[in-house]
Length: 263
Image (cartoon, rainbow, N blue to C red; front, top):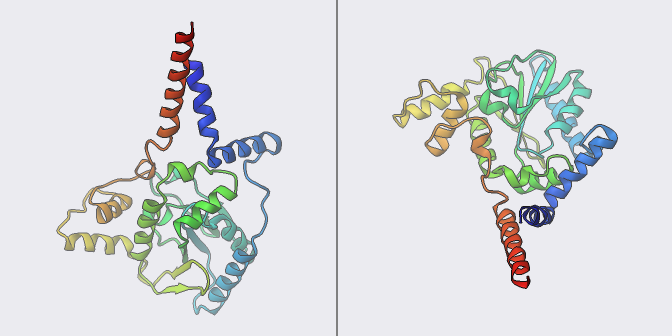
């Protein structure tokens, strides 16, 4: 029966396009060394980068030496980071989730991108912050189309992820600059810094909520949902594949029982 369960469950899981995409990515990794499709510039993102460069050049302050790019998975952060790196002469660097457990040692002369940068880190090392505010549905579509981490669509609560990210960006001090026809929101570091943690604590104090001993992400969760949470787990949708598992168990049990009755 165990073998029947595994076979039926595997068939059920492979009915999901997201998981078939994951298998394609694994096969690509075996043959090419990378799970991703070969990188290609995206014309619309190249246009975004050109528009951002115009904003940089029009700024009265010095040219940016450090840039943060944040936004949901699939929003185009990596593509935008690469495009800006070519134009600014900065190094582009993706930060992984496991590297954001504590304060990250940012270095000048770089463009950093991750979906949890603003909500977990001190933003004052960055001259400019770019937030890609695309819709959750657009983000999911792009995650699947890039054929790399498509299972994120099943496993991650994109709505919660974006809601916390939107709130974190809104807490940043400074004038918000937008690019017409794009999902980009941009802020330049004010002279006194972004002061986002101070703003967050002040809003919680107004609600008579104690803020001592909590991380920035925990405070954002308290502000949005009333409970301190941080890390990856709060965004994970538990039981994402329950339907496939229970269906596999049912089919295996039914087939096993049918064979016993026939014998």
